[in-house]
Structures are given as C-alpha cells and as structure tokens.
Image 1: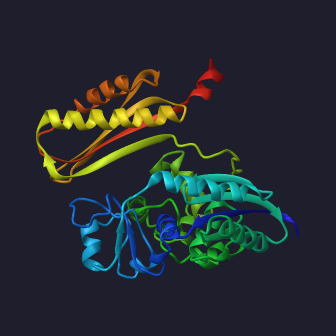
Image 2 (image 1 turned 180 degrees about the horizontal axis):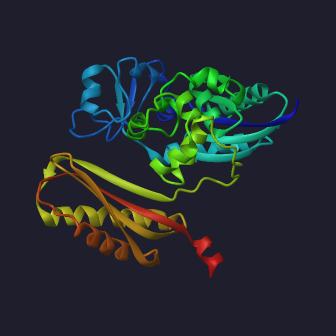
Length: 350
C-alpha cells in the first residue's frame, strides 16, 4: 500500500570517510580527525574517528593525545570544514533528485518524507545513488516519525537500511532506558528517574499533565510524545541554513594576561563576522564562552542594537560580553558564537 514514510539518512563516519576518499591509501587504517592533526599538541580533541580507530576505543570529544596513546599507529589529520561542506552539499543534492521532501539537519544527516509502497526499496536506491555520486556510504532508517526513523538508523549502521514503526516501537524500545531516546540526555533522564520513570515504556505510560507540572507546559508533553514514538509534524523542505557559527580554542598554555584574552576574543569575533557576511548573513547576537583552568565553563550572550555586517561592531560587542566575566583564574578555553539572520530575510521584513 502506498503511504507516506519518514526516512533518516546518516552518512557513515562522514568526516573520516571524506578524508579517506582523497587519500585512498588510508582505507582500512585507523584514521582520527581533529584540531591541527598533531597528536603531540596539548588540548586538542577528536572530531571523528574511522570505524577502525573506534575499535581502539577512540571516540569524538576525546583528547587527541589520549587517542594517540590508545592507537599510536593511527593516522591523525587536521579538520577541513570547507571540504566537508562541499561533500555534504553533493549528498543532499543527490537525495533531492528523488521525489522526496528533504529536511537537512547538518553535514551528515537529513530526514526526508516520501510516498511509496516500498520504503526499503527507495532507501536502497538513495543509498546506492549517494554512493555512486559521492563515494560515501550512508545508513537509512525508516519510520512513521522522525524519532522512529532516527532510531532505526542506529540499527541500520553501517551502510544498511532498517525500519522501526509505531507498530513495533514498544516491542523494540519499551524495555530500554529513556536515554535510548534521541533527545533525552543524562540530566533529563535523572529528573525522570526521580519521578519513577526509567524505561521508554514507563515514559509512554506516564501522565502528560504530571510531566507538564514537572518539566513545564512545552517540554513535559514533548517528553510524553517521545515515549510514544515521537510526533508526526511535517518535514520542512528548505535548504539547511545555520542559525549560528562559532569558534573556540583550547589553549596549550592557560591565558593569564587580560590584553591577550581580549585580543583572542576580538580576533575570533572579527573572523566569524567576515565569514558569515561573505555568505550573505547578518549578525544579530554575539556570545562568549570561557572555561577556566578548573574546567568551570560559562557562556554569556548579548543582542546587538541592530543586525550588522560590520566586524568592528561585533568585536566591540564581544568585548562587552567578555567584560561581564570575572576572570579570576587562568583561562583554558575561549569561544565566540555569532547568531545569524539572512540579508534576504531582513529585506522581506522591511
């Protein structure tokens, strides 16, 4: 029977796979991508690891030095965002060549809706088309909702297709911890546990009104819907547009000199602004992130008086935000984030 399905595509070990494509001699070897690619430098983290590297326990977010200790023979490479963006764009263009509604969620994943009597057949056609066009493999999950499709993708990896629908949701997921649900992390799981809710089945059976009282009128009912397998809101067929862009640096030596800290924040704010302006974007807010030598981390944000393309204005705003921090300890990490608008959006509202 022809009906509408939600499918979720996830590119397998995307960043590592892109690097292997341009360095075929690395195929089958443990590859780690992150920072400058130099494992002797301190305070750099893994962005991604190939499946071969993961067998050594290497994971995203791990210090690169720790990854090198686990697998000294791994190949360490620096990150190259423009190359990943170009590869992702080609993947999404390939998916859009099919009669589907595409909702892009980032470089390496997208949801798409399709009317078909054979969702597995369609998923396999798209998988093969992506492989042929880009050389990248992907996994595709099928479901009635985004949550079910995303969950099914986990069962499909690597390079496979899997289905999880409302009919089998509780059979497959009911006995699992609520943390098995996409969107529920440890903190929320802890609060649910305090309410006597530990499994997906218990969350599904919970009283939405009680959840609303505990978590608020928006989050509470949303959690209830997650327990039942997710909501059925329609996909949005628009190109993915980043709402923000950020940059952060973990320094090999803690920063203690205030002028040097100011200079780093100004540099990042200026660089980010010039990048987003080149993409036709406007900066509407600027945020600064500071992590001290004790690992205490805070982020502060400020809205600009009006959207701007002027790096000097954003730099000054970033310094104002930085001035709201009490920098009593050495600084281990600094970050700047600019939140964005589009020039064409602003013109449409004028």
